[in-house]
Length: 130
Image (spheres, helix red, strand yellow):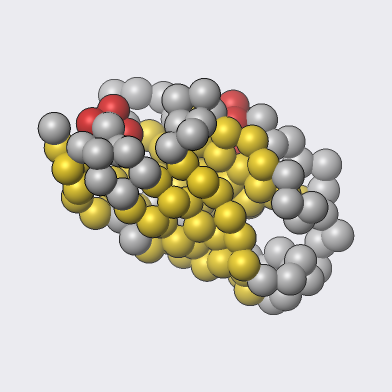
């Protein structure tokens, strides 16, 4: 059973930090898979933020490079993995609902592809005030 459950959202002032977590279940049976984060602000399109694959390769949207760090815990074939997004130097423009996403096989890391991943979580709200 595939399940993605996010946590860690909240409200913070500009310049502050937050760490998002996502418990990912059901992907350990794949030899390669990608885990990522995308976000959606009210009235805006989904925006890929960052992704990481089972080899540890990562990719980031230009808007978050140097401020956000994606990481994962757990061995590739574990039944459950943890995905994280450390968000530093937050800006009001980072305010959005953040979603965890997962895809298998020849999945792309390019940020624009992350919202198209096969499986998504329910989202966690991040609000940054000026």
